[in-house]
Image (cartoon, rainbow, N blue to C red; front, top):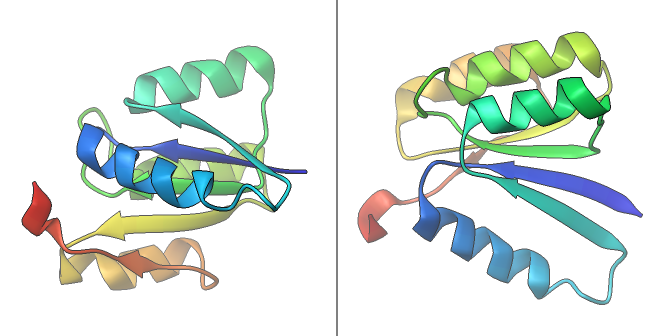
Length: 110
């Protein structure tokens, strides 16, 4: 089973991602949701939790999704990341962390 995590400080974005994951019910995928970087990091450190896929908003309070990915990369060298942003300036920074995945989305719904 694939175990994924979503971390975003915007409830609307979380709901949209949950709808996508819930639509994949015929696959063996489970996911956890965190609304703050602090909450996710605390859980990962306390429980030594590793996920297969990490989906982060890039702009969040406390630290950016890019900074969060760098911290997780220290713990989980094989982690895959998807970064969510409506800002083009972050694209190249995202590729410095991973060359595998990058996602853009439109922030009109905010």
